[in-house]
Image (cartoon, rainbow, N blue to C red; front, side, top):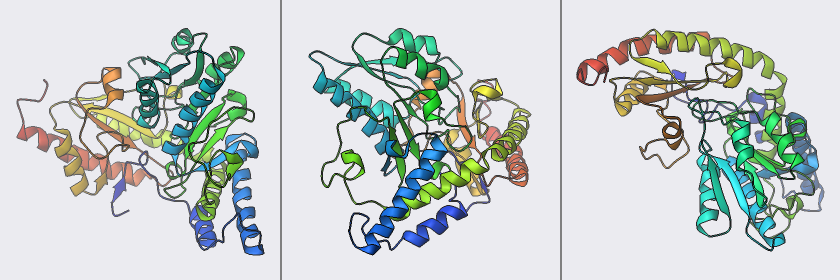
Length: 387
Protein backbone atom coordinates (compact mmCIF):
# COMPACT_ATOMS: atom_id res chain seq x y z
CA UNK A 1 0.00 0.00 0.00
CA UNK A 2 1.59 3.22 -1.21
CA UNK A 3 0.72 5.41 1.79
CA UNK A 4 2.73 6.82 4.67
CA UNK A 5 0.07 6.10 7.28
CA UNK A 6 -2.81 3.67 6.86
CA UNK A 7 -5.79 4.71 8.96
CA UNK A 8 -8.29 2.64 7.00
CA UNK A 9 -7.65 -0.87 8.31
CA UNK A 10 -11.41 -1.40 8.65
CA UNK A 11 -11.60 -1.35 4.87
CA UNK A 12 -8.66 -3.71 4.38
CA UNK A 13 -5.62 -4.49 6.50
CA UNK A 14 -2.28 -5.74 5.09
CA UNK A 15 -1.87 -9.51 4.80
CA UNK A 16 0.13 -11.17 7.55
CA UNK A 17 3.41 -12.91 6.63
CA UNK A 18 1.92 -16.28 7.57
CA UNK A 19 -0.96 -15.71 5.12
CA UNK A 20 1.39 -14.64 2.34
CA UNK A 21 3.48 -17.78 2.86
CA UNK A 22 0.42 -20.06 2.83
CA UNK A 23 -0.96 -18.42 -0.31
CA UNK A 24 2.37 -18.74 -2.09
CA UNK A 25 2.71 -22.40 -1.09
CA UNK A 26 -0.70 -23.37 -2.44
CA UNK A 27 -1.06 -20.85 -5.28
CA UNK A 28 -0.40 -23.60 -7.85
CA UNK A 29 -2.47 -26.22 -6.01
CA UNK A 30 -4.26 -28.95 -7.91
CA UNK A 31 -8.04 -29.25 -7.75
CA UNK A 32 -8.80 -30.26 -4.18
CA UNK A 33 -11.64 -32.50 -5.36
CA UNK A 34 -9.36 -34.60 -7.56
CA UNK A 35 -8.51 -38.11 -6.40
CA UNK A 36 -4.84 -38.08 -7.41
CA UNK A 37 -2.07 -37.33 -4.92
CA UNK A 38 -1.71 -33.65 -5.87
CA UNK A 39 -5.43 -33.08 -5.50
CA UNK A 40 -5.57 -34.83 -2.16
CA UNK A 41 -2.64 -32.77 -0.90
CA UNK A 42 -4.59 -29.62 -1.77
CA UNK A 43 -7.65 -31.03 0.00
CA UNK A 44 -5.56 -31.64 3.12
CA UNK A 45 -4.49 -27.97 3.01
CA UNK A 46 -8.13 -26.87 2.79
CA UNK A 47 -9.18 -29.09 5.68
CA UNK A 48 -6.26 -27.96 7.82
CA UNK A 49 -7.34 -24.38 7.17
CA UNK A 50 -10.89 -25.31 8.16
CA UNK A 51 -9.57 -26.63 11.47
CA UNK A 52 -7.59 -23.41 12.02
CA UNK A 53 -10.74 -21.38 11.40
CA UNK A 54 -12.76 -23.55 13.77
CA UNK A 55 -10.16 -23.11 16.50
CA UNK A 56 -10.11 -19.35 15.95
CA UNK A 57 -13.89 -18.95 16.00
CA UNK A 58 -14.51 -21.71 18.56
CA UNK A 59 -16.80 -23.87 16.52
CA UNK A 60 -16.69 -27.26 14.82
CA UNK A 61 -14.72 -27.63 11.57
CA UNK A 62 -17.86 -29.23 10.10
CA UNK A 63 -19.64 -25.88 10.55
CA UNK A 64 -17.12 -23.86 8.50
CA UNK A 65 -17.96 -23.10 4.86
CA UNK A 66 -15.42 -21.14 2.82
CA UNK A 67 -16.75 -18.23 0.76
CA UNK A 68 -15.40 -15.42 -1.38
CA UNK A 69 -15.75 -12.97 1.51
CA UNK A 70 -18.10 -11.44 4.04
CA UNK A 71 -20.71 -10.37 1.50
CA UNK A 72 -21.21 -13.88 0.17
CA UNK A 73 -21.25 -15.26 3.72
CA UNK A 74 -23.94 -12.77 4.76
CA UNK A 75 -26.03 -13.51 1.68
CA UNK A 76 -25.71 -17.26 2.19
CA UNK A 77 -26.86 -16.96 5.78
CA UNK A 78 -29.82 -14.65 5.19
CA UNK A 79 -31.15 -16.03 1.92
CA UNK A 80 -30.30 -19.62 2.70
CA UNK A 81 -31.92 -19.67 6.13
CA UNK A 82 -34.98 -17.66 5.09
CA UNK A 83 -35.63 -19.80 2.02
CA UNK A 84 -35.22 -22.98 4.05
CA UNK A 85 -37.72 -21.65 6.58
CA UNK A 86 -40.19 -20.82 3.82
CA UNK A 87 -39.92 -24.34 2.47
CA UNK A 88 -40.85 -25.74 5.89
CA UNK A 89 -43.56 -23.19 6.71
CA UNK A 90 -47.20 -23.23 5.70
CA UNK A 91 -47.44 -19.49 6.27
CA UNK A 92 -45.35 -16.30 6.14
CA UNK A 93 -41.96 -15.99 7.79
CA UNK A 94 -40.39 -13.01 9.52
CA UNK A 95 -36.85 -11.63 9.60
CA UNK A 96 -35.45 -9.22 12.21
CA UNK A 97 -32.32 -7.14 11.63
CA UNK A 98 -31.04 -3.70 12.65
CA UNK A 99 -30.52 -0.27 11.18
CA UNK A 100 -26.74 -0.39 11.65
CA UNK A 101 -26.05 -3.53 9.63
CA UNK A 102 -23.58 -3.68 6.77
CA UNK A 103 -25.18 -3.41 3.29
CA UNK A 104 -24.29 -7.07 2.81
CA UNK A 105 -27.00 -7.81 5.41
CA UNK A 106 -29.49 -4.98 4.86
CA UNK A 107 -29.30 -5.41 1.08
CA UNK A 108 -30.40 -9.06 0.95
CA UNK A 109 -32.85 -8.52 3.83
CA UNK A 110 -34.67 -5.78 1.91
CA UNK A 111 -34.42 -7.75 -1.33
CA UNK A 112 -36.09 -10.74 0.34
CA UNK A 113 -38.82 -8.46 1.68
CA UNK A 114 -39.41 -6.80 -1.71
CA UNK A 115 -39.82 -10.25 -3.29
CA UNK A 116 -42.39 -11.17 -0.68
CA UNK A 117 -40.20 -13.95 0.71
CA UNK A 118 -40.23 -12.50 4.21
CA UNK A 119 -41.75 -9.83 6.43
CA UNK A 120 -38.96 -7.56 7.62
CA UNK A 121 -38.47 -5.65 10.87
CA UNK A 122 -35.48 -3.29 11.13
CA UNK A 123 -34.68 -2.44 14.75
CA UNK A 124 -33.41 1.07 15.42
CA UNK A 125 -30.08 1.56 17.23
CA UNK A 126 -29.29 3.81 20.14
CA UNK A 127 -27.46 7.04 19.21
CA UNK A 128 -24.12 5.41 20.02
CA UNK A 129 -24.67 2.74 17.38
CA UNK A 130 -25.41 -0.17 19.72
CA UNK A 131 -28.67 -2.11 19.53
CA UNK A 132 -30.23 -3.04 22.91
CA UNK A 133 -30.88 -6.74 23.37
CA UNK A 134 -34.36 -6.05 24.75
CA UNK A 135 -35.32 -4.07 21.65
CA UNK A 136 -34.32 -6.96 19.41
CA UNK A 137 -36.17 -9.51 21.53
CA UNK A 138 -39.28 -7.33 21.52
CA UNK A 139 -39.28 -7.48 17.71
CA UNK A 140 -39.38 -11.29 17.63
CA UNK A 141 -42.70 -12.82 16.63
CA UNK A 142 -44.12 -16.33 16.47
CA UNK A 143 -43.21 -16.52 12.76
CA UNK A 144 -39.67 -15.13 13.12
CA UNK A 145 -37.30 -17.46 11.29
CA UNK A 146 -34.06 -15.50 11.70
CA UNK A 147 -32.53 -12.58 13.58
CA UNK A 148 -29.38 -10.92 12.19
CA UNK A 149 -27.41 -8.55 14.41
CA UNK A 150 -23.81 -7.58 13.69
CA UNK A 151 -21.14 -8.17 16.31
CA UNK A 152 -19.41 -4.84 15.75
CA UNK A 153 -20.31 -1.94 13.49
CA UNK A 154 -17.88 -1.19 10.68
CA UNK A 155 -18.30 2.59 10.91
CA UNK A 156 -18.77 3.58 14.55
CA UNK A 157 -17.07 0.50 15.98
CA UNK A 158 -20.01 -0.12 18.32
CA UNK A 159 -19.99 -3.63 19.82
CA UNK A 160 -23.30 -5.41 20.41
CA UNK A 161 -24.05 -7.87 23.21
CA UNK A 162 -24.17 -10.99 21.05
CA UNK A 163 -23.19 -13.19 24.01
CA UNK A 164 -26.45 -12.12 25.71
CA UNK A 165 -28.66 -12.13 22.63
CA UNK A 166 -27.70 -15.57 21.30
CA UNK A 167 -28.77 -17.64 24.33
CA UNK A 168 -32.00 -15.64 24.70
CA UNK A 169 -32.97 -16.30 21.09
CA UNK A 170 -32.01 -19.95 21.24
CA UNK A 171 -34.35 -20.40 24.21
CA UNK A 172 -37.10 -19.15 21.91
CA UNK A 173 -36.04 -21.45 19.09
CA UNK A 174 -35.02 -18.54 16.83
CA UNK A 175 -31.63 -18.75 15.04
CA UNK A 176 -29.25 -15.80 15.28
CA UNK A 177 -26.87 -14.75 12.52
CA UNK A 178 -24.11 -12.28 13.30
CA UNK A 179 -21.85 -10.42 10.90
CA UNK A 180 -18.51 -10.61 12.74
CA UNK A 181 -16.43 -9.20 9.90
CA UNK A 182 -15.04 -6.29 11.95
CA UNK A 183 -14.75 -8.27 15.17
CA UNK A 184 -12.28 -11.06 14.45
CA UNK A 185 -9.17 -8.89 14.51
CA UNK A 186 -9.59 -7.65 18.08
CA UNK A 187 -12.48 -9.43 19.82
CA UNK A 188 -12.63 -12.95 21.24
CA UNK A 189 -15.19 -14.46 18.91
CA UNK A 190 -16.87 -17.58 20.35
CA UNK A 191 -19.54 -19.18 18.18
CA UNK A 192 -20.28 -21.89 20.75
CA UNK A 193 -20.56 -19.67 23.83
CA UNK A 194 -22.54 -17.03 21.95
CA UNK A 195 -24.94 -19.74 20.72
CA UNK A 196 -25.22 -18.21 17.27
CA UNK A 197 -26.60 -20.31 14.44
CA UNK A 198 -24.62 -18.53 11.74
CA UNK A 199 -21.64 -16.18 11.60
CA UNK A 200 -19.85 -14.34 8.80
CA UNK A 201 -16.17 -13.40 8.63
CA UNK A 202 -13.92 -11.85 5.98
CA UNK A 203 -10.20 -12.54 5.68
CA UNK A 204 -8.88 -9.19 4.55
CA UNK A 205 -10.09 -7.51 7.74
CA UNK A 206 -7.56 -9.36 9.92
CA UNK A 207 -4.63 -10.27 7.67
CA UNK A 208 -5.71 -12.74 4.99
CA UNK A 209 -5.84 -11.74 1.31
CA UNK A 210 -8.90 -10.18 -0.25
CA UNK A 211 -11.33 -12.64 -1.81
CA UNK A 212 -11.84 -15.20 0.94
CA UNK A 213 -14.21 -15.46 3.90
CA UNK A 214 -16.22 -18.00 5.84
CA UNK A 215 -19.79 -18.68 6.80
CA UNK A 216 -20.18 -20.64 10.01
CA UNK A 217 -23.44 -22.59 9.84
CA UNK A 218 -24.53 -24.61 12.84
CA UNK A 219 -24.86 -28.33 12.14
CA UNK A 220 -28.47 -29.27 11.54
CA UNK A 221 -29.44 -25.73 10.54
CA UNK A 222 -31.47 -25.92 7.29
CA UNK A 223 -29.86 -23.73 4.61
CA UNK A 224 -30.80 -23.52 0.93
CA UNK A 225 -27.63 -23.17 -1.21
CA UNK A 226 -27.13 -20.07 -3.34
CA UNK A 227 -25.10 -22.05 -5.87
CA UNK A 228 -25.54 -25.57 -7.16
CA UNK A 229 -23.03 -27.79 -8.87
CA UNK A 230 -20.51 -30.29 -7.59
CA UNK A 231 -21.76 -30.28 -4.01
CA UNK A 232 -18.53 -29.13 -2.37
CA UNK A 233 -18.58 -27.80 1.20
CA UNK A 234 -21.51 -29.86 2.52
CA UNK A 235 -23.47 -29.12 -0.63
CA UNK A 236 -24.04 -25.61 0.70
CA UNK A 237 -21.48 -23.92 -1.51
CA UNK A 238 -20.55 -25.70 -4.72
CA UNK A 239 -17.40 -24.77 -6.61
CA UNK A 240 -13.71 -25.61 -6.79
CA UNK A 241 -11.95 -25.03 -3.49
CA UNK A 242 -9.59 -22.03 -3.57
CA UNK A 243 -6.85 -23.91 -1.75
CA UNK A 244 -4.39 -21.02 -1.67
CA UNK A 245 -6.90 -18.49 -0.36
CA UNK A 246 -8.40 -20.94 2.11
CA UNK A 247 -4.96 -21.85 3.46
CA UNK A 248 -4.09 -18.16 3.76
CA UNK A 249 -7.30 -17.51 5.68
CA UNK A 250 -6.47 -20.31 8.10
CA UNK A 251 -2.91 -19.06 8.61
CA UNK A 252 -4.09 -15.49 9.13
CA UNK A 253 -6.75 -16.31 11.71
CA UNK A 254 -4.31 -18.50 13.63
CA UNK A 255 -1.80 -15.62 13.71
CA UNK A 256 -4.49 -13.07 14.60
CA UNK A 257 -5.76 -15.14 17.51
CA UNK A 258 -2.23 -15.80 18.78
CA UNK A 259 -1.41 -12.10 19.24
CA UNK A 260 -4.93 -10.73 19.62
CA UNK A 261 -4.56 -9.75 23.28
CA UNK A 262 -1.38 -7.80 22.57
CA UNK A 263 -2.83 -6.16 19.46
CA UNK A 264 -6.03 -5.24 21.29
CA UNK A 265 -4.17 -3.54 24.14
CA UNK A 266 -1.82 -1.74 21.75
CA UNK A 267 -4.63 -0.50 19.53
CA UNK A 268 -6.64 0.65 22.52
CA UNK A 269 -3.73 2.84 23.60
CA UNK A 270 -3.10 4.08 20.05
CA UNK A 271 -6.80 4.78 19.55
CA UNK A 272 -6.96 6.81 22.73
CA UNK A 273 -3.87 8.75 21.66
CA UNK A 274 -5.41 9.45 18.26
CA UNK A 275 -8.78 10.44 19.69
CA UNK A 276 -7.26 12.71 22.33
CA UNK A 277 -5.23 14.50 19.67
CA UNK A 278 -8.20 14.99 17.38
CA UNK A 279 -10.47 16.18 20.17
CA UNK A 280 -7.87 18.81 20.98
CA UNK A 281 -8.80 20.48 17.70
CA UNK A 282 -11.68 22.92 17.66
CA UNK A 283 -15.02 21.60 16.37
CA UNK A 284 -14.27 17.86 16.59
CA UNK A 285 -16.56 15.33 18.34
CA UNK A 286 -16.16 11.61 18.83
CA UNK A 287 -19.05 9.37 17.82
CA UNK A 288 -20.01 5.91 18.98
CA UNK A 289 -20.07 4.38 22.45
CA UNK A 290 -18.37 6.31 25.24
CA UNK A 291 -17.40 3.16 27.17
CA UNK A 292 -14.28 1.47 25.86
CA UNK A 293 -15.80 -1.97 26.48
CA UNK A 294 -18.59 -1.15 24.04
CA UNK A 295 -16.44 -0.14 21.07
CA UNK A 296 -13.72 -1.72 18.98
CA UNK A 297 -10.22 -0.66 20.05
CA UNK A 298 -9.34 -0.20 16.39
CA UNK A 299 -11.98 2.42 15.53
CA UNK A 300 -12.01 6.18 16.08
CA UNK A 301 -15.01 7.87 14.47
CA UNK A 302 -15.32 11.66 14.66
CA UNK A 303 -17.42 14.48 13.23
CA UNK A 304 -15.86 17.79 12.22
CA UNK A 305 -17.60 21.14 11.90
CA UNK A 306 -16.86 23.48 9.02
CA UNK A 307 -14.87 21.03 6.88
CA UNK A 308 -15.89 19.55 3.55
CA UNK A 309 -15.56 15.76 3.67
CA UNK A 310 -14.26 15.26 0.15
CA UNK A 311 -11.72 18.05 0.56
CA UNK A 312 -10.58 16.59 3.87
CA UNK A 313 -9.98 13.05 2.62
CA UNK A 314 -8.25 14.42 -0.49
CA UNK A 315 -5.97 16.65 1.58
CA UNK A 316 -5.14 13.76 3.90
CA UNK A 317 -4.43 11.52 0.93
CA UNK A 318 -2.06 14.07 -0.57
CA UNK A 319 -0.24 14.14 2.76
CA UNK A 320 0.11 10.35 2.72
CA UNK A 321 -2.69 9.61 5.21
CA UNK A 322 -5.23 7.00 4.07
CA UNK A 323 -8.52 7.63 5.88
CA UNK A 324 -12.20 7.25 5.09
CA UNK A 325 -15.22 9.50 5.31
CA UNK A 326 -17.41 6.39 5.45
CA UNK A 327 -17.47 2.63 5.02
CA UNK A 328 -15.65 1.14 2.03
CA UNK A 329 -18.50 -1.18 1.15
CA UNK A 330 -20.19 0.46 -1.81
CA UNK A 331 -19.47 1.34 -5.40
CA UNK A 332 -17.50 4.43 -4.45
CA UNK A 333 -20.41 6.85 -4.76
CA UNK A 334 -20.50 9.66 -2.20
CA UNK A 335 -23.78 9.01 -0.43
CA UNK A 336 -24.95 9.61 3.10
CA UNK A 337 -24.33 6.71 5.46
CA UNK A 338 -27.57 5.00 6.59
CA UNK A 339 -25.77 3.99 9.80
CA UNK A 340 -24.87 7.57 10.70
CA UNK A 341 -28.35 8.75 9.76
CA UNK A 342 -29.89 6.09 11.98
CA UNK A 343 -27.70 7.25 14.88
CA UNK A 344 -28.32 10.95 14.29
CA UNK A 345 -24.66 11.77 13.66
CA UNK A 346 -24.17 15.33 12.38
CA UNK A 347 -21.17 17.12 10.93
CA UNK A 348 -18.57 15.81 8.50
CA UNK A 349 -17.85 12.19 9.42
CA UNK A 350 -14.38 10.67 9.45
CA UNK A 351 -13.63 7.04 10.23
CA UNK A 352 -10.09 6.30 11.32
CA UNK A 353 -9.26 2.65 11.89
CA UNK A 354 -6.10 1.03 13.17
CA UNK A 355 -4.74 -2.44 12.57
CA UNK A 356 -2.08 -4.96 13.47
CA UNK A 357 0.66 -2.94 11.69
CA UNK A 358 -0.24 0.44 13.28
CA UNK A 359 2.43 2.25 15.29
CA UNK A 360 2.71 5.21 17.61
CA UNK A 361 4.83 7.01 15.05
CA UNK A 362 2.04 6.68 12.48
CA UNK A 363 -0.51 8.11 14.89
CA UNK A 364 1.74 11.06 15.72
CA UNK A 365 2.39 11.69 12.04
CA UNK A 366 -1.35 11.67 11.36
CA UNK A 367 -2.04 14.10 14.19
CA UNK A 368 0.58 16.49 12.81
CA UNK A 369 -1.15 16.40 9.44
CA UNK A 370 -4.60 16.89 10.97
CA UNK A 371 -3.31 19.89 12.94
CA UNK A 372 -2.27 21.50 9.65
CA UNK A 373 -5.04 20.36 7.30
CA UNK A 374 -8.19 21.01 9.35
CA UNK A 375 -7.53 24.73 10.12
CA UNK A 376 -6.38 25.29 6.54
CA UNK A 377 -9.58 23.82 5.10
CA UNK A 378 -11.69 25.85 7.51
CA UNK A 379 -10.06 29.07 6.39
CA UNK A 380 -11.39 28.31 2.92
CA UNK A 381 -15.00 28.13 4.20
CA UNK A 382 -15.21 30.34 7.30
CA UNK A 383 -18.99 30.68 7.17
CA UNK A 384 -19.48 26.94 7.73
CA UNK A 385 -17.31 26.73 10.88
CA UNK A 386 -19.42 26.35 13.98
CA UNK A 387 -22.64 25.93 12.01
